Amino acid sequence: MQGFNMGRYVPPEHEGTVSANKLAGKHALGNRARKAGQGILTVRFEMPFAIWCTTCPKETIIGQGVRFNAEKKKVGNYYSTPIYSFRMKHTACGGWIEIRTDPKNTAYVVTDGAKKRDTGEDKILEGDLQLKTEEEKDKLRNDAFAALEVTIDDRRQASVDKSRINELIEATGKDWDDPYKANQKLRKGFRAGRKQREKDHTATEALKDRMSLGIELLAETEEDRMRAGFVDFGEHESASQEQVVRAIQARELFPSSISPSDRKSSKHGTPKLKAELASEQSKARLKRELGQNTKAVLDPFLSSTKSTSTKPLGLKRKRETQGAGNPTEDSEDVASNVQPTSSLVHYDDSD
Image 1 (cartoon, rainbow, N blue to C red):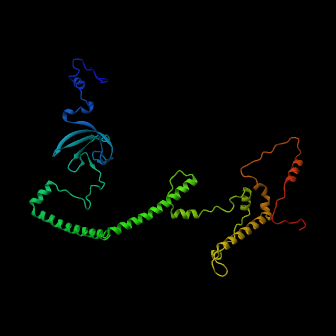
Image 2: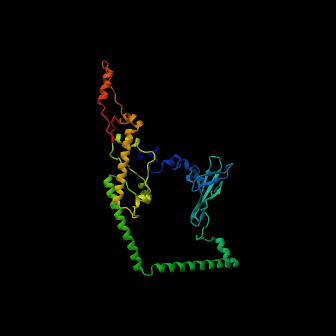
Image 3: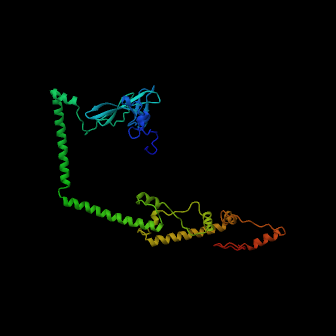
């Protein structure tokens, strides 16, 4: 019986004896195996590193990760490991690029149509282990001078390595001469850091609960303390809008300042107490408020704009028009309802 959704029809006389692909004369991989007779299979090849295409009129770079439909073919063996060749076409110029596997160095080698981009990672650095090829080994066996040069270099390198190893052994022995004291020192430092971390974590969690924060808070730094110290919240936090506007209008343009030396030292040269400083600040604040109130009453410019400045900002009052009303009577009623402003200093008309 034919399987479910096989895709091809198999006659009953051939069912179970031959596959549908063989019966139709097609390969299981379809168009990818159109050159299977030549040992070539079409695969999707991704560029392992950036290369320069030398077939283009002006050399063009092909970045790492660019994919091509490449022809995969076995070209040889390294011992029992096969060496594969990937041949692909560059659509920009129509040239062919060939890359082969290198099982000996576990890498890819560009053999035709391009060259690898030099990024400096193939350079041999100090301390890298270099394996000798069979040609180099044969040369050392047959050439006495080459073997002597290698022996001299090895002896020189061995003496440098030996001195370095002795320095490391001495440093390690000095640090771990008494393992108990070294362990005790490490545990003591860890214990002190653990207590500080627990204290900071407790304070952070308390702050998050108090401020209802759902984010992680970072540790406080010296820059945060300095920036927080520059913030000044002012003295009139609970003042109304009218009082704030009035205080701003009556503020002096060039206020008198007290030098830091007079602020911190008394008449006898001794430092002032906090109570004395607070008392002086309150006196200065009271004096400043008295001067501002007097200026607000006597200054004609402030008195003329007083009616407009005391109105709530951003609000407009809609007046109802009365057709039968008398404008003279309305103005008199408004004038009678105006209360005299309270000022610190009162002047009689006779004066």
